[in-house]
Structure formats: structure tokens, C-alpha cells
Length: 89
Image (cartoon, rainbow, N blue to C red; front, side, top):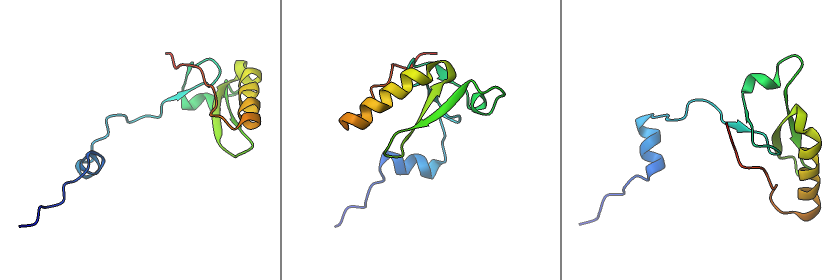
């Protein structure tokens, strides 16, 4: 008798339609501060999106743009993952 295929955890969650984390969770790559999505469109904007040479996009606080750009420049030079700060709220 052949066993029935079991669903993976991800497939079961998708089938149940459960969403435990409804909102986006965005953190600055330089300082780790939690950024609300509205901060990108505020006037004046208090958060920005920077892109590396590969086209990947990274969030940053307006106050940390210089430090974030240095992190992305190092990433572009070395090919290593971006050394982002630990997240905090």
C-alpha cells in the first residue's frame, strides 16, 4: 500500500489561510530602528530605500543614509552580504 503524500508546514499554512504576521516589518540596515511603511511617503520622508549595484533594495532611516551607503559600497566591493545592524524597536 502506497503512503499518501504529506503537506509541508508551509503548504498547510497556505491551505489554512493563516497569517500570523499581517504587516510588513522593516528595519534600517545601519541602525536597526523599526521603520513604518508610511515613513517612506511622508513629507519630508524620514526613511528611504537604497539599492546596491546588483539591484537589491535596502531600507534606511533618513539620518542613516551615509552609513547605509557605506555598508552597501562595502557589499558591492566584497560581494559579501550586507552587514546590517540588529533590529530593535
